[in-house]
Image 1 (tube, rainbow, N blue to C red):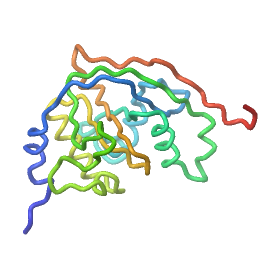
Image 2: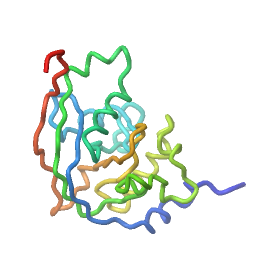
Image 3: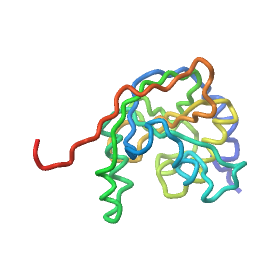
Length: 191
């Protein structure tokens, strides 16, 4: 039986080590929620977090999904929009945040848009972007055990660039997330 990249995930991620990260990040989100809200993540599971829809409360954790460029935030929202949910676009805001973190795991070299090859041996980008969230939730769980406040990961859009997944419940005392500006994009036909 061949080894899976998940067999030694804790050791593999430990070798990558957490590092400080600071910078601007963006989030396209429902205007009725604060840019730093984790309410949706606690209800519905996602790529790098577990919600109450599939897991008991003791096995859930919150996440705030941010992007490293505003156009990626919009593309991520569009990627999750269907004809049935398109009307929700008119109730969305684009927020810019400033993030200072002490312990971020760059498990996929997402900070370098020209290198999106995952740093986990045996793992390919398709593993991170598939509809099966088990592998990415395993990465998040292992990173959380190491004390990571967040993960830098590639965006699953067709655009180059990365995402920052924050674990707000694990923020260290010297870490911070600050909303710089929240804008309501105009989708009207007049400039």
